[in-house]
Image (tube, protein in one colour):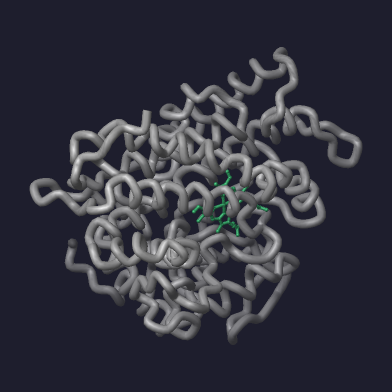
Length: 406
Ligand code: HEM
């Protein structure tokens, strides 16, 4: 810690600041931000280039309103940020075109597809647990960080499973690399890799997967530009892997350090769906995605001007005491939990059904195959926090050894 106070951080949030490797400290800063003002200002917006800085919405009520009002708070980036984009992405468009893009991808996340995927996700999770289950010790972060990529690439996306480690590493550096140069180089590397992999697909027979649908779909009678196809593939890799992985890593760490809660979930498995929602609220996978103001608009006494950038801080909103009683406690059977973990409004997470399924099965299999797991006494968990994707990179656990599944 550098000695900078909560108030100093709150006055100009820099999510990449080293102090935020302490997760509780970051949430203390959010508390100050919510207490003092509905919109604080940052000189260092963390996801898009906006030279004038950006406003940060911290409270639940304002975040929710902004997410519902796409006509004033557009997902189109600022002109400076647009320069860094490779094409039209579903997440950077507004309706009606954004809705047309969603229609293209939606069938891949349908309840029927998710139901069919359930046994496969269980098998893939079991295979990861098999890597260490008979040793009685292992790193649960390996399950959290590898399972979502394997499932997505193998059963939905349509690129080789061997690409997962490279794509995960490039995405990680692109979001969390130490310098802007490192981050930009990783974005370039990911673009290049996906460009080549998708180009290779153009000469192969059709398959039932997302790459195929992006290559062949028509919107308003026209096929997508190649840059849009690669850009949306990049978005899916970025949106689908690290978010789920980091949320799952929080849950594993929490259960490894709260034996009574772990046992409660084992004894009452019907609590699991609620617990997953609470983990999503509590762990805060996403700390902000920007909106660009399109026309003068007033919200909670603040007048926004066209061109202003506003970051919706879902993680802070999810700890707002006005919406969630006892917000800093992880209450596994929390009753009313309208969290913003998956956003709200027209851009609400497209992959939420998949994320929930991967997450729930991940927790179920760990609980059933190593029911007495707990944090290892001789090795520390590693948390990576001064970054956009925040989560545990190493969760060393010990448990009674179990049998491999195959
Ligand atoms: C725990 C895991 C996840 C979390 C916390 C999460 C969170 C979010 C949030 C907050 C948004 C809204 C963005 C906005 O308001 O601009 C979003 C959008 C999106 N998510 Fe997720 N997500 C997760 C998993 C996934 C997965 C597994 C996929 C797909 C493989 C996915 C694909 C998308 C896409 C494509 C969008 C853009 C939708 C649009 O703009 O209409 N997400 N996600």
